[in-house]
Length: 282
Ligand SMILES: [Zn+2]
Image (cartoon, rainbow, N blue to C red; front, side, top):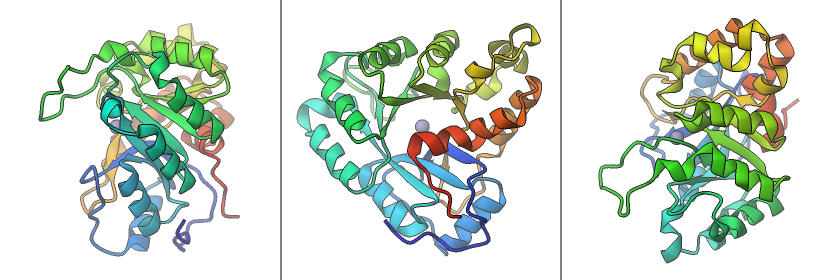
């Protein structure tokens, strides 16, 4: 891994965005000084990002921006499995320092036994299995057969967690729109965490989210304690920061349920630190 970028950052992770992409998706085209970019993003409140991208793009981003800023998580379209040695490829990136593997667009439900060897590998390497859950935006070319969002719902992640109780699992997008299902699964399964990233959750009312984590105003600490901050926007490009509305959304939620400081820290960074094994620089 590359040497960390040196800057004014004091070395303690205060906020980690656990779901980000690069633009273009399969590469990093940022023009300018990588250390200046990292300083700018940290000054705007994000100390590190979990990059979900093809393995090559993750590797390139770590070399350019530093392994204390970019946490690499190679991403796999499970429907490509029949023609590709996905397990061998995963092994290669895990050998090179990947902290997790992201799974998306399966041909079968996530709990299908054909995928178990992949999950076993992630478990053996003590990495994190990141699952896209719920709705998936269509790609420009139609997939054949079409992606079934039903195959990616939290119920199937629950079955994976039953079979692999020690596998660290992060459910992206809170199984949109099966919110209740995601809430139950991550609240009940010690090894399952979740995020509220994506362009849908922040458009639902704060009364709905308040009820989710503090029914009738009573905070369910161990439920909120399983949530990680995440945006699902692109970093590592020259455009404006796109994560601001997500920081604001999480802030409103934490305020709404009157979350104590310790829980706020878990959501902003603590869970990410534990899941991905991040080490503070001081
Ligand atoms: Zn995403």
